[in-house]
Image (tube, rainbow, N blue to C red; front, top):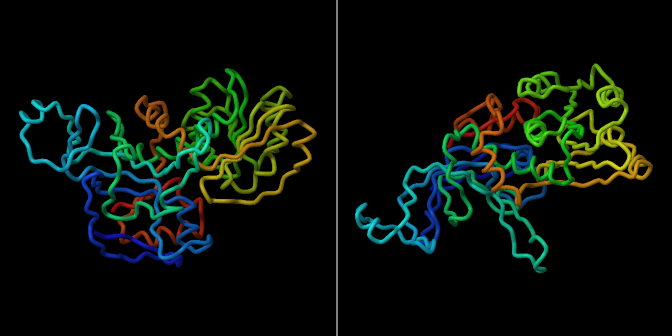
Length: 352
C-alpha cells in the first residue's frame, strides 16, 4: 500500500506499507484529495509537526469490496455469498465501487453530557488521506447522494465549515451579512445565506473571485481595491450596516473591515479553516463601542451530516470551483505553486 508522506520540504515521498488487516473496518480506495492552505502549511514546514507526516483532510474514494450489514447494523466480515443468500438473511450490501465522502473529524466523547467532545482532524492531528487505501468505520464515510458528482462531493468539509459559520449566530430573513473574502468558503457561505433568505455582501480585493461570486448569484459584491467597503456597505444597507459579518481568515488586505462593517449589537465570526491562521490589523475598540459578539470557527465537525444533506438537495452551485487537477506524480509542483500564491487556483485536486 502506498502512503504519500512529507518531511515539510514541499515534496512527497512514497512509503510502501502492508495493508491493514481488519474485519471491523471498510477498505476504501482514495481517489481524490483536495489540498488546502492547512495542507500547504504542513507540507512547507511552517507549522510544528512530527515529520514525516501524511497530509490530506478533504478526500473522496470508492469502496474496494462488497461488505454486508445485519438488520442491527453490524458490519460482517468479507463474505462471498449469492444475492439469494443476502436476501434470505436480510442483509444490506455496501457494494464495491460505491463512491464515498471521507469524514476527517474524530470527536472524543464529551466529559459532560451536554457538551461537545474535543475534535481531532485527520491530516492535522493524525495522518491524513494521502494514501492509496484507507480503512474506516462505517460511520466515518458517507456514500454519495444520488446525482452528486466528484467535483461536488469533495467540498463537503468546506460546506460544513460554511454552515458552522452561519450557525454561529441566530439568522433572520432579510438580514444583511457581510462576507469578507471571496474564496471557496466565502462563496459557499454567500450561497447558503441566500438559501436562508439573508442578504449577502461579498467583499474582496480579488476581482476574479468577486466575479465568481457574482456568477453564482451573489448580487452585492465589493472590490476593496476600487471602493471603500465601509462606505459601500453603508450605501447598500441604507446606513444600517450589517447584522452579521463573517471574515474568511485566508483573505488578505480586507480583514481590517470586519468590525466597522457590523451594526451595533451585531455578530462577527472569524472563519479559520483548521490551522490556516492569518494575522490582520483591526480596530478592536469597535468591539466594545458597538457591543459586538465575536466568535471563531475552525471546522465543521458538527455540521458534516447537514453538509451532505445540502449536497443531496442540490442547493449549491459548485461548478467551476476546481481550477486545477493533477496526478499524484505532479503533487509536488502543485504544492509549490500554492505556497508561492495561495490564490493560484480557486480550488485544486490531486488524483491518486
